Amino acid sequence: MRWLITGAHGQLGSDVQLVLAAAGVAPSDLRACSSAQLDVTDRSAISAAFDSFAPDVVINAAAYTAVDQAETDHDRAFAVNATGPALLAAEADRRAVKLIHVSTDYVFNGAGTRPYRETDPTDPQSVYGRTKLAGELAVRELAPETSLVVRTAWVYGAVGSNFVKTMVRLERTQETLSVVDDQIGSPTWSFDLATALVELAQSPVTGTVLHCTNDGQTSWRGFAQAIFERLGADPERVQPTTTEQFPRPAPRPAYSVLDGQGWRSAGLTPMPSWSDALHRAFAAVGDQFRSASS
Image (cartoon, rainbow, N blue to C red; front, side):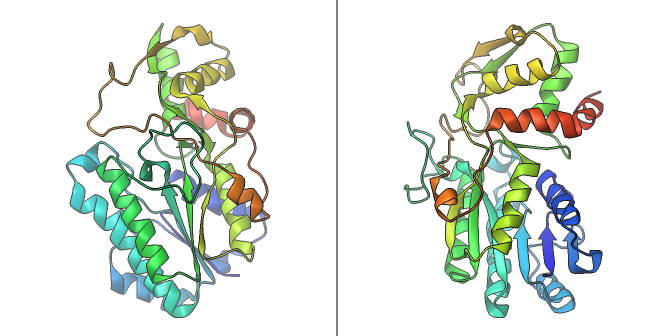
């Protein structure tokens, strides 16, 4: 099986490579491309990559994820999050290549009170969410039989900037800090997500939308307190605040929990709890969390 990974230098793309290497995939059967190595908004570059490598599966981990910046950088966000997936889907469909496209909880409006199912109506409230939904719709339209859309949320990992690294840094530099307590979601370790995507790629499942996050839910404050506990720090140093008291350019979903029943019903391995994942993440890459936050 030959694997093409886009967005390969991001936290998810990096972990997909680690999972594939651990599974014994030969370097000759893996092409991991950063945005500089493969611009997903360039039709001719995508066609050339398929021609030269002939992948059996593509995992599209490339994304414009600067949620606030997207509010004023719509064209670039749309190009990466919508045009890119459309070009990949068209090429994958033409060659009958399996495409796994990674999307987000931001396609929902965040007003829910129970975990979002794959079939729930979408209603994005930000430019980021709207561009990601446009990418989903393009993939489903252009490669209906060979594609999979996988929505995830609150992803963190060893590579790049993320909430865990921010909290590790702030624990060192601030006696107390305020973190919003009225946004609820499921923190997801990128390595667990990468493991799940590789399993999905090797399964017969195709032509659908699935949700995949670590199991369970918490608030951003609860997540921050759990990180403090992993650092041996007093979690009560993390004080609650509200979204209203901490305004951002792009609206955040108040409720981002994604229902994992569809994933389990597809015969795929249930995702571990978010708290278990955080424990394993610190055991595996805690030094990277700490060094990146120095």
